[in-house]
Length: 338
Image 1 (cartoon, rainbow, N blue to C red):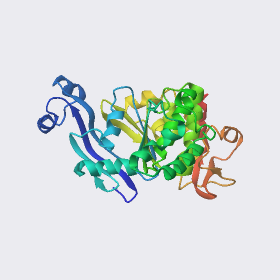
Image 2 (image 1 turned 90 degrees about the vertical axis):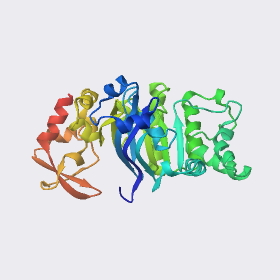
Image 3 (image 1 turned 45 degrees about the horizontal axis):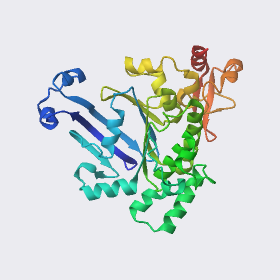
Image 4 (image 1 turned 45 degrees about the vertical axis):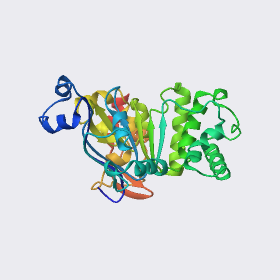
């Protein structure tokens, strides 16, 4: 755990059943998910250790029932864990009193869920201001903050609309604005765009990336859509049967899947769209000539890779060369996608 670690999760278990604490103490170390189920219990989270850094967007993904939502609910102690430890902003959340936990959620955490959960009899502005009202802020202060975040999410001019007068994408924006109103340091989003049609979903992803670029929140984002994960994540944690199969950058997950389960997720992905020059750069092989940007994908560099004759192409970050990219290795990734 470093100074930049916001959430530290160590050997966390969440077991559902009659007496999960006693069962976990007596359970054999090599018990599988199916063994646990055969004993009459369900391992919602199975021995998970993971850290989330300040300003990072960690995307947790997996199929339905993989444990992703259960894990995030453990992060905020909406679920009491069966074993292990969770530290948030230096505080062991399992040791917090109910009052301290409520304060942590109110002042540090924002949550957005798939169901918008808007109050139908309240306007956009009133919905956004609602958590500030619950916090006890005066009417003028909460109205000013609500107006600010309504503008931030692109709903200026619709402050007096009711939820029924908004599209699905606009309603989701209200939900995002409401969670932002309290200025959370940590933002949990549980499949917030999955109920939207593909075009609106893409627009919301664009909007979300814009907001993250402006605000720099620490975000844990749940999805079952691998393309969405690849587009949004700094790192992706892929879950199966309550356990994390692999947690790594999108580039490394598609290039080096750790398990057969992860490989199946990646097999239909266009690697050229995901893999960036910076990942392919080798520090001891700088190359010569004009460098390419480390953030450029292999797909972005397709024309250059086909026509350039240099065996090693320099790669730079903010104008500083960090290494060289093997042109043939990059071409192999490009040709694999074609």
